[in-house]
Image (tube, rainbow, N blue to C red; front, top):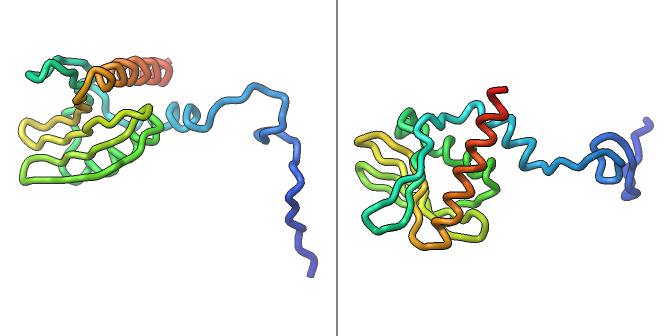
Length: 142
C-alpha cells in the first residue's frame, strides 16, 4: 500500500509561507471571521473611579456564555489568559494583551463584559483594542 511521503522540504503554493501573494496574518483572518459572532453592542471606553479605563463590550453575554466569549475575544486580540477567579456575581480573568496585564470581567448584575485597565499602559492597550474592534466590526458589516 502506497502512502504519500511526509517531507520536511518546504512546498510553494497558495497559502504557504513561500507563496508570493500578500501575507495576511492568521490572527487577522480569524478576527474577521469571528468578530461577527461576537456581541460588541456596548463597545465604549469609560473612565473608572480609579482614573483608569474600562472598555465595555457587551450586555448580551450570560454567565454560562462568558468562557466561550472570552476565549473568542482573546483569539481575536491575540491575547492569553493568565488566571481566573469568580464569585457569586463576577468572573474575572487576568489576561495579557500586547504584553500588558488587564482584567476581562463578567458582571452578572447588571450584565456586562468589559476589559479593565490597572495602569496607564493598560489604558493605551484598551484604546488600541477599542479601535481594532471598531475596525473589525465595520469591516464585517460591509
